[in-house]
Amino acid sequence: MFGDNPPSYPQKINFLLVPGFSLFGLTSMLGPLRHANRTSNRELYQWQLISEFGGLVCSSDEIEIMSHTSINPQLDCETLIICAGYQPQDQISSALLGFIRRQANHGADIGTQDTAAYIAAAAGILDGYRTTMHWENLESMALTYPKVKLCQELLVVDRRRFSCPGALSGLDMMLHLITTQHGNGLATAVSDELIYTDKRDHSAPQRTQLQVRIDSRNPRLNEAIQLMERNLEEPLSIPELAEYVGVSDRELERVFKHYLQITPNAFYRNLRLDQARWMLQQTTNSVTSISVACGFASISHFTRSYQKRFNKNPSQQR
Image (tube, helix red, strand yellow):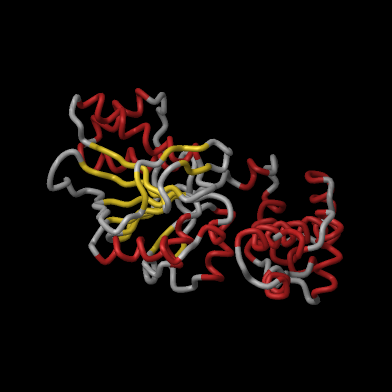
């Protein structure tokens, strides 16, 4: 799809809306296609919204969108983009997975947006492929589908599979499509129409740089937090962290309290608990396995810590 001109025009793209999909993510993909048609004065792209049952589909914003058709057996897609949002595992059905597999078997280009890679992986069409999804879900996805090659980028294209992590990255993805098929001139004109003047490279990271997120330029603090984020399952001790970043335990404590008003231990524990919450919401893994994956030595310690931070037990988070 990317770099190849379609055999005929208009190029037909089907968007499969899964309940709870991101409305912002959908419109960020449709806008560039509409403007490409308008700016070129040709119908380069034509799209259709489909859903499992047809009719209205509720987005994560609780706004219902009317789909054009259902996933009926007569529907063959040249290009299929699966759009999902919160808790994609709850929306999986045998009919949905069967439809996705059939499109893959027929040679369709298949894309995923936001958390839809989880659904495509469940259909078995991403094994051995590079893909991306929203950064909050990457860790749980990696645990559930180890054969999928996950990376945290804005756009990943691997043979007949492509993916973006949702929200504004859909706009980046469609501008890249327009560029590869119809040239930078048209893509730039579409960007100007959308008042989007700073196009991002598809390999750019999904998250703001750490020093901006925590509003700190202290290199020791940044390095310590990066080490924490990379070592959630087997947490490093504070002396180990201090040694890695080249300061004393006491100095590391002082830096955390000065910039973040929290101790290194408490900050590290909160990172692990935040990860646990997302795994509870986004996977079907057991509470015990999640506690281990987030570096807690015992389920009782995990439960007490979780209750203290979120005012509910881990089992109540599902």
